[in-house]
Image 1 (tube, rainbow, N blue to C red):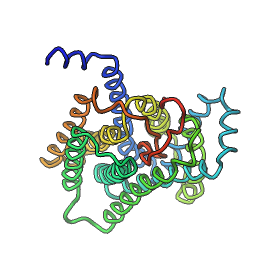
Image 2: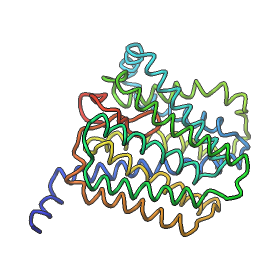
Image 3: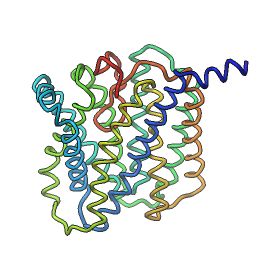
Image 4: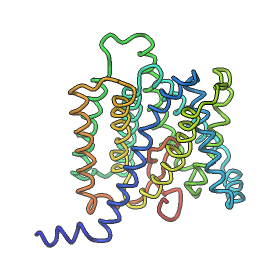
Amino acid sequence: MFTSYFSSVFSSASAGARLSLLQVSAAGILWGTAGVVVQVVAGHTGLGALAIGFYRLAVAAIVLLVITFPARRRIRAAFRAAPAAVIAAGVALATYQGLYFVAVRLSGVSIATVVSLGIAPVLLSAWEAWRARQRPGTATLAASAAAIGGLVLIGGATADSGATATAGLGLLAAIGSGIVYAASTAISRHTTQGMEPLTLTTLSCAIGAISILPIAAVEGLAFTPQAIPVALLVYAGAVTTAVAYALFYTGLRRISGSVAVVVTLLEPLTAALLAVLLIDEPLGPATIVGGLLLLGAVATLYLDAGDDTGTAPVVTGPAGTPDLSGGTPATAPAQG
């Protein structure tokens, strides 16, 4: 028994699955820092949520365009092959990011991230199970239940019983961002088959920046350059978008969509903890218990990596979550 267990733990397949989980976890943690960046940048510059969203997408697009410059002809060909699908992905990315950043400004980092990121995995996991006509494994179901419970506790703890109308609008924005996040991922799958993930991400970020620019310009893009906000805007684009996507794509080589969406719930946990440590958002017992449930969910998936993560790769949606709508992956090889 013990021999077979340790053989499983140290087998190449298990090691690869666990490495993939580490990569996806790192992506989720990086995404979780974006909400605090919004609050800090807004406090230093007076920029609105949509303006910050534009700068993040613009920086990400520039970084990705530099990285993919040797493949620029392939990128142009990919756009010409499916212009409507690529534009839809970019607009969806801008819409999700815009609504999320609005929610962060109106309701706070924790509630915005928990609500928007909590809705999407539930909807996408249900869609994946329905399309595949297959019941998820026991460990995945247990991890999902623990993760949802953790999200409910964190969300309830961050919701103020005396919430203002502004906070209510922020909550609606968070719900809207989660719905757009899930819906755009589910419906875009079949129209983007055959496109390399990095190509789609580069085009999506560029189109997303262009599509949000007019609204952001009305809100106001001008600010007095200062070291901290400029550095944070570069970080938001280069690290929380470009690097995080690269990690996520690579990690999807050996894990299923159901596992990936649970692991990326490290994003709201990271956001809640950073909000407490850096911008003094409250942390109560319910938030602590919810965070422990989320960590327990991720730990369950790590322990089960040798048995439950070696399923077909999935394609990521425009905002960082996997595309769980079923069907053929967007690239012939595994994601990466």
